[in-house]
Structure formats: structure tokens, C-alpha cells
Picture 1 (cartoon, rainbow, N blue to C red):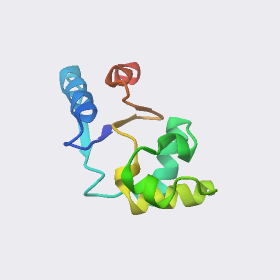
Picture 2 (cartoon, one colour):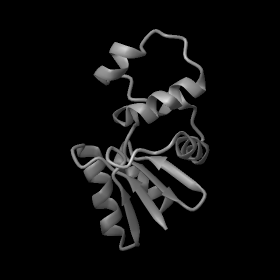
Picture 3 (cartoon, helix red, strand yellow):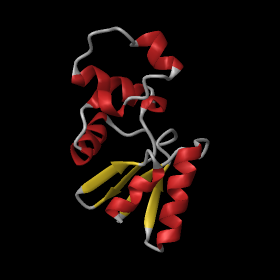
Picture 4 (tube, rainbow, N blue to C red):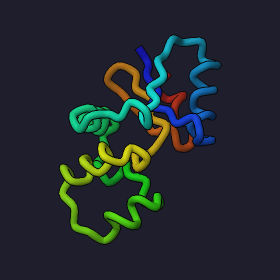
Length: 113
């Protein structure tokens, strides 16, 4: 099953969703701002994405700038920050089997379909 971690208010996330819809494949929408991933789920996503926690953080978000910027955080602390403030998670994320991509640009999603 394909999953998309989606924020309906985000243009890139909506574009990613449109790519999935056009593919004709079945998928599940995870509205991660409403259903926040646990720290273990974030670790699972990071493993599939082959990214470090910092590579998944939206560092231009006000929450990051005000609370975390310039601090020497461990990977665990970055994951905890994303769990506490899911708005910090880069989007959209599409997962299919053992692969995942961040859909920026949205066309990257096609690489795992």
C-alpha cells in the first residue's frame, strides 16, 4: 500500500497528491498534522528515506527558528521536535513498500511508483 504524508494546505503536497491520483494506484492519505507520527514512526520514515533527521526538518518554519535554530541537538532531540511540532516535517512524503521519497519537487514521487 502506498501512503502519502499530506498537508492539504501545502501546494507541493497537493501537487504530490494529484500525481498519486493520476497514477491510478491505491493509496492512503495520512494527514500527519492531525495524526502526528510517533517518534518510532518518524525513525521508520527516516530509514526508508535514507535521511538524517535534520534533512527532514523544515528549518524555515517559525517554530524551528524560535525554538531550535542554532542549538546543538542530537538526532533524538530533532526527532522529538518533529513529533512535538509536526509542522516541522518536510512534505509530502510518499512511502511504497521499502522505499520513500520527499516530494520536493513533486515529480520525485514518480520515481517510486
